[in-house]
Amino acid sequence: MLDRPTPSPRERVVALVEQILQQNAREQRVAVDAELTAIGLTSIDMVNLMLAVEAEFDVMIPPVDITPENFRSVATIERLMGKLGVDGAA
Image (cartoon, rainbow, N blue to C red):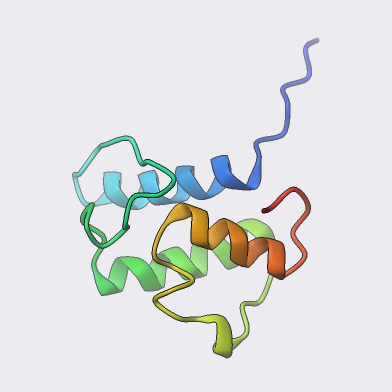
């Protein structure tokens, strides 16, 4: 049996963003530095993304870190996960 490598935090965040886009009938690949609102995420989508990130990484994002800057792109979310101590995050 082949063990599949564990997805990186970046890959996991990209997958979450792509799932939200698919739910809104907007299928597209997500670039790491793409501005999430520019590719179609609404304010409700951003709240859903924040909740999905907390669930995916089993973290609680402190209110002070729930800012547009931290949720601007996959890269900024990945940095936030690193700040919160998620293994492998930037």
